[in-house]
Length: 189
Image: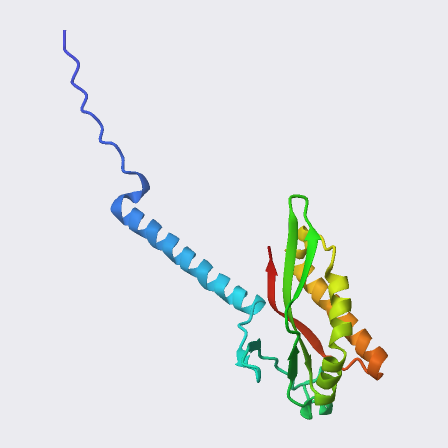
């Protein structure tokens, strides 16, 4: 009888094309990751433009406000050509209110600055500061902690405070005067 011939063991086949395949795969992964980082950075820059800060007359840093020089039709609007520089008034000391959370009593401390372009408006704010402070404290009291911690909640509170300050000035002087209101410090404990 003839003995069967010994079978030679088969060599295992290299998966992925060997070293060249691994290098190409790693290079493709690197390029894809780099493209994702670049695209993500561009999108982030579009959604969140960088802010410039300026040193105010009171020695505090504030966000630089840029007036739009062009109207909706692409031409310079006459109303923006003669804008006076922004002037700020800070309510000092900061406003402090407490509010209930399910776990503890919380405190909110806000440093509020108002912006106007007329010195007369700033003087009117100074003269009416006690009434404005009072109404803002009443407005901020009994807020929902979870809502207040969101960006939308803070922005809604800021808009309500602006409208209240404008309402008081309109009542006292006949003109709302204040263009904007900012939270330059927002601390919750």
